[in-house]
Length: 447
Image (tube, rainbow, N blue to C red; front, side):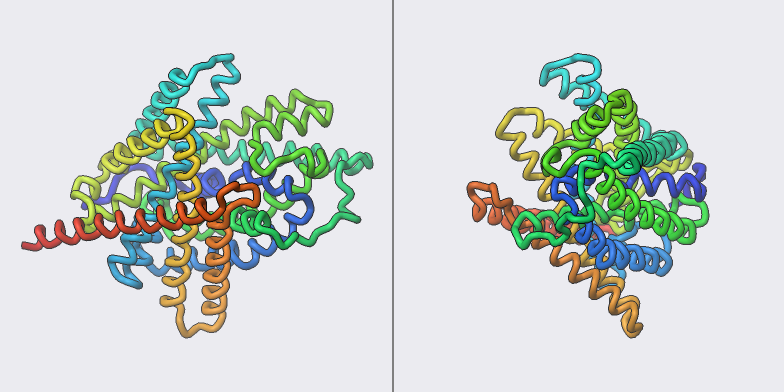
């Protein structure tokens, strides 16, 4: 297959791409709703999951050349079956996330324009989804502007929140007494759920390896981008949570509240509501950047599966002018819009969509079991690397447990737990069936 001749991302653009893809400000009100006891959870997750993930992702990116990322890492260490299941889970986990961003963007636009109606909502989701699929087909040369604006929007929102928090703290009017606050997380189911959520908030940087063929400088530049986004995550998540608690007390936030509502509230509470409007604009930019980045990252996985003949050969092809995997983009865009349709069709299917989001978190986290196992196999015999890999595996397992634990407010916790476990098993069976079909396709090509 010919190497795409399209322009590639440089160091600065790759760093902006990584920030847009990996930093989700929506986790700030979730942590603020827990209060100061969220700080030790942030720091523990950074130490036992974020740091091992960064070390393993950089090492594996440098070890395995070419595109494919976590799919290739698992395939080349544990065989094609493990690689395919890992890639299948990783690819699936993106759809609810991307559909959720579409929901947010359309809802924000309709609210600002004073528009209403479920049908209009769905039509706008279709149009915006089709627009961004078209931009992906046009290549990274077009889409990079959205990821760049998204990264800038992310940092500007953080700086606005942090600046107001510091100003209130200096004037002695902070809403939280950090000196006498309780920092010990309670031993409850909700804390376990929060642990799974915070680990998920630190995930995603390994996806940059899927962009290796689209980055000038390859593994070296991607390693620099991963290092930068790691530091940015820790700074933004911990200081951002502290700033939000400085502006408003813990009781003002809810675990299920949206970031847009929180931004409106904190700047109105501070007496400068105009900053809330500005922050919402920046939030829209951040969401656009995250959508563009992950749409592009996820579309690279079918390319690797197409090269291995697990998918029809058309998925292995990239446009020679733009470098875009056109078939993968079209398939992915269609599946995202299907997710949107599930959420827009009514109350019962909206519940189905919420469930798919939970499944997306579970399948995404499960992929890190494969990632750290691949790292351990590659680096086996090196004491420090074994320690890093084992710590990462233990953190991942604990996060998976936290993900499947039902909320304390769930009226049917056992049914919810069984539904998640059975659905994960069904998804695995579907992946095995696709793998079997791919093996048959490989056999047919060989003969």
